[in-house]
Length: 149
Image (tube, rainbow, N blue to C red):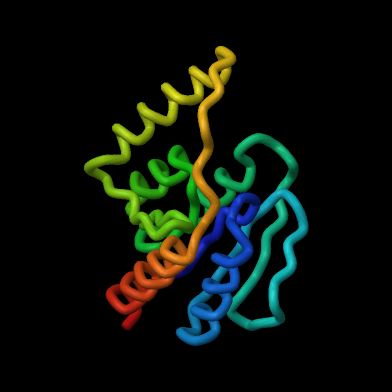
C-alpha cells in the first residue's frame, strides 16, 4: 500500500499526521499538487508537482495509483475514480468513502455545484476541529494496520 495525497487542498495538520505515520510505519507517501509544497526530508516522503490545470493533480494520482493504494482527498469525483480502480479514498475528516454511497455523494456534489453556478450561496465545510483530526488519525491507523500490519 502506498499513500497518495491530493496536496493542493489537504490541511497542514493532516499532512503532519501523514508525515509521522509514513516515518513510523515506513510507508511510501507521495503528495501531488500544482504548487510547491514543503515536505520533511525522508526516504519515505516525496512530492510531485504537476502543471496548473484543472484536476491535473487528481489525474496524476489516478494515473499512478494501484489497487489497494490509499488516497487522501476531500474531492468526491477523485474518490469515485479511486474506488473504481480498487483503491481506498479517505477524507481529511476521517471519512472512508464507500463504493455503496459514492454515487449518491457525486449526485449531491453535482447538485450543489449547479446551485453555486446559478448564483446560490451554499456554505462550505466547517474548519477542521480536534474531533476531525482524531477521526482521521484513527481511521488512518486502522487502514494501515489492516493492510500493512
